[in-house]
Image (cartoon, rainbow over all chains, first blue to last red; front, side, top):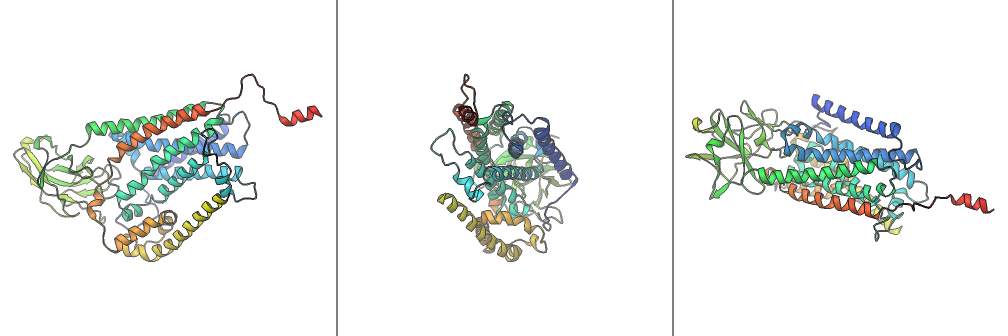
Length: 353
Length: 125
């Protein structure tokens, strides 16, 4: 953020989001532990510590599945965008639930020997050469490390310090973690499961996550932002008739660089499509009083100079543009973030009202 | 067991180096490379776990920012194309893992009643 850092920036929406999330987690744990103790109890052969471990473990798996569904759902349908907001708090809570699961496991299965319990976790099963009886704990350890790294780097400081690009790449670990968790559950509890309620829930959740990601990828391929036609420094991005007052057209300049061209009060302005905060799609936001609002987290920018209103200091690059006939062209060399560019008047008759 | 000890020891060393770097970064470095951190102290405690784990990355970024080598255009080029490969990976690995897990699952023989060994011993005596 561009104001002084504080531990957590709260607002009403975050309080509500967190309250719903906490209530859901407590409700799930309560139902699992007290209402349906047989769901994973394997005919009463386990004790309280193991039952609690399984409650927290299955809760973490389901939370992770929900988190991973939010991204593709938001890409498929804009109505899911509000769920994207504050997803980081969801992730941090999932990490804590997963840590609790690990604590129950370590303090029960590995705590009653002369060895260090963390070392015991590593050496108690080393049958890496076979699938049946594979040391599934290693998948859990890897996933837990990923979740802790993601939670630990969730503060806005890390976004600015590492840059959104590196931060995003680190946070792609969530997918490796999920695949690892699926292996942890599949080669772990699934091998010993007598009541198949959880088996069905587990398989359904994992398949839904994979299917939604494939659907979103195909949707992006089919309906993604068009690649600008390049000829020298000026590239053709769209026609004047494509523009709609108060909204933007997005075009890809390169595989990684997108420009958003806005029509505001009959004039065109072009800024980077990537928000300075988390690289959210600015071109999908609406202009209100010359300010476009990022649909992901609400950061705002003046479309003429790419700067956030005071006291914020976030800036995005701007682009020079021109209109030739009915074609809108953008200079593919971005201006430094915060550079003012005089808006270009558009023939209103050519644009959609 | 020796390998487990070595891994655990290496992890402790890794975190100890991270703690040392966290000490210098959070007291000296952070004020030099981020003006929004100047005068803000409580949030720094939240940064400690990440520095313990990813301290080589912290050192690298600290060096980049101190020497003003940060390329601003890179901040606005998100790796969105990776979503496609993520979808492929999830679509391949998840069904394979589930199928393998179900196929190696062992079930108890239908016509065999489990018996407690201790009870058998008691019967013999």
